[in-house]
Length: 275
Image (tube, rainbow, N blue to C red; front, side, top):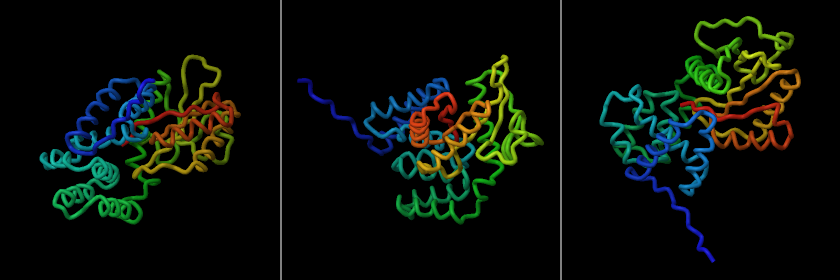
């Protein structure tokens, strides 16, 4: 009888997690958008960890190598000596409060913060801090819209953004009236972007809903289910729908819900790289 091979645990030390993160980035960044989710899953299986860990590794690595965050070049190198969990918290914090995240990074290195106090400080700042609430943060939504535009362009070459919800889409865009059937609806819940595809397709309009925000946290299954059912309703009006999930956990739930309602042609769910 063949012996079972034990999965290798992930060690969150500098030499381990940072080197692993570099390998994840190489594989993910050379893959097509549609292949990234399967790559994350394979890497997780190889490491013997849950599916969200490779994404956390990639985010932490991008955070430490993104020059926009660092005035002190020595700081990111020193942060490599910190556990992945701590760097992940800082990476999340830097998405909406980079100045406060940098101060916290220095305090972490100085021994004034540990994982518990760092996490508590980030959560408190996200709830009541100086930042603008994520749902109304125009800068973040513009960035998320650009990433969604890139992903839609890779999935549907030639697709053109024709409408965006308030606060979404490129700066300066003013889409007064939604296109097609959408123009007759009083409200457009969960619709963030609408694209028109070329090539004479029978359903040229593509509705895009972005399930992602600053200070990323997994959504509840109920919320994701309601989102899927709403998108399925749009599909019955003759519109194609695309749900872009910012977290692997959310995508897994969304995929299960689509399968359970037996409407795979109505809603397509994909992973989007944001942050």
